[in-house]
Length: 296
Picture (cartoon, rainbow, N blue to C red):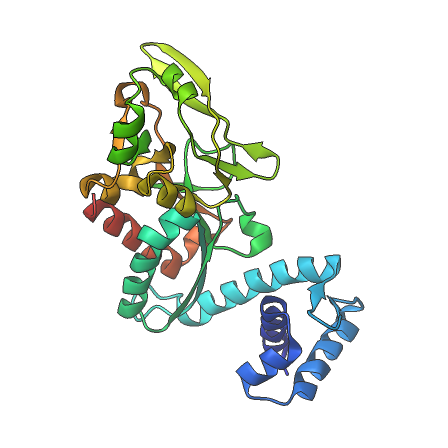
């Protein structure tokens, strides 16, 4: 195997966590995959993979090499197939987005983009944690703002705001709050991550910004589950307007305290270094921007 093929083999091993699965996918003997990995490790003078009875895992050297492989292979694909400003788009794009938005809005747009560009391979990774774009080998991530300080370039995709919402049946049973402090009497559904539970929601009363402490009986680390609970009447959620737009339009959710929730939560495409230079990456970002705007 030449160097690019060995790199692709290693990326496949890292992503699938199984030598036999890679062998089946590549249509080669397992011994060929094992030999290729051994040859690569010998050439680098470092162990890249730890082998166990259940699943392979990367060594620290392997994790660093994986990041480099993804970057080099992406650059190579761009030179070989995407350098020209015309012609079919080819190659791979890796994107990350939050669970709720990703399933509702991003995945359908990725599907329509791939139907227009059958030569592409797009990997969509959904998570409500902020992943490291460089370490994860992603071209860009879909994130809500305000964005943290970063040297990464970003493109505005959609403007939105935080909204307090619940099912109309919930409001009918428990009453509609007239001020954010009234939320202390409600069952609030909160997004919970390791070391970060969203127990305070931000509001604005005139020129005064403040945070209201909330509590409830349900915590979850998945934004879609949070929205599903709200639709089911389980409690009050604090969601971005673009996450609940369809539910509000259909009458499944009703917002309150809109005059107090003026904080923007705009949606951005945040690019890994140099990723924006790729024609295929720019094309997908443009497609997402157009599709999100058309649905508003």
